[in-house]
Image (cartoon, rainbow, N blue to C red; front, side, top):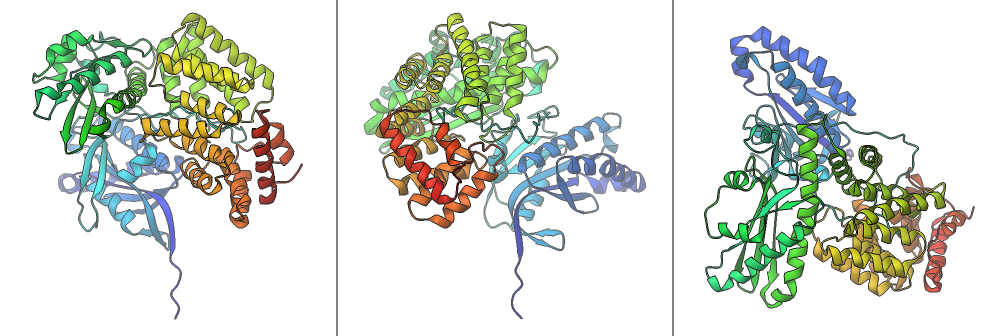
Length: 636
């Protein structure tokens, strides 16, 4: 008999059980059973349905569910744990039912409605090590939510699990260890499905104006009760002297330079409060208690780090710490060649400061939103707006909620520069992502917002980047380059400005330069979750150079990371067709046409949206149009 084909699918698995169930049933078997049945029927099952999940089976003291999205699974788990906590508040501790929840994503076997395989087993093991009232997720699941949800997970490292062949990277959220309080319920802004929004401000010139963002880690609710914490200024930080772990005092110079340059760089963040180098260096060589430093200096955050030489390498490590709780909010580590150390010095500082600049805004915006959600001023709202704008994946609709926050900020303070700049991208994107119904009006609105921001603050580096994007919409590419370079002159860590440089260079018929800019951006932020914007920039520039095989490789990377984003799908379809891969080209084009964000569905529409009049670019645009025609895009 031939082997039957096994049904498999990639899915998010949620496993939950009751902590201490045997103890509870031992004290009151019928009461515990009735309470659990009520919780499942009134809270758990409806929440799973709300987040488009399916209960696979109940297991006596627990359950197994599946979701089509890891984000939905985590949101559901948070709502369940909040609902359980609210119900437990009225019960004595010994009678409380507390769930432990584990979440994994994996390729599983489906048989008669049940799920099997390592993906399920890992979720069950994660549930077993979760704290009562907490959530434990795998590294694979974490990668899917790290830049999409305003949560702070604690990194527990790799752990060996029973009957699981390989160690599993584990992240936890909440629980009775109180290392982290559960966040408030996440409200998700859902836009009408027919609305076309490709991405937020990451697209420039029909390609990308990327903001290389990093994953969000949010501050604890626990800080609210700490002495002096509420008085600490917004975005306040001290950069402690980096430690020299090499054992040679003569090597202190590099650690000191990094400390000084990071202090200077972080002071460029709007409304930041950075302790001066002279004060920070009084802690050099001393054992420090970050909580005590936070109280002494009146800061919310502490950055510490080290440099260590070994062989031909120097290892740089840094970590951002919550001065109120001592919790680690972010960390990075990388190696530099000793031979290139002087040349690498600026890149080391830029890489660290870029990540920290974005992180601090996100962390503090989340802290304010959670500790005083009903008392947000204009800057609070603008910071939340920026955090959402920076971290919305291409092709999703959630960005509109971020822009609404900017509009609310401007209602309270029409001179808020952060809100003016971020709101400008709403109108810029309508033009640069082929979705504007009134091009001239959108360009005018964007220009007015950016011009107002620059008039209020001539040092607003993000406004210079926004100005570069406005100039791209106006086909003023040389001027756009000047403004992008000006933004980098004010803040060398503004990596997203390289995207405007890439786009302008490509539209001016200088693809070699665009490749250089893209590669530099990727080198400065090599672990960024939004690297796909520069994958696309490089792929497009390589296609201009007729290096089609390499272009296809980079466009594939962009599509893999942002499957809902129409632009790389279209460019990839054209490139595949031009290299004779017609079947794959047609399949890619069909995906492009099926996306809700796709507006240019004919050759005529595609040509009508061209932003450059450069002869070299127009020649390549004709080649792209021919590739799309070969892939099956109709003329009209």
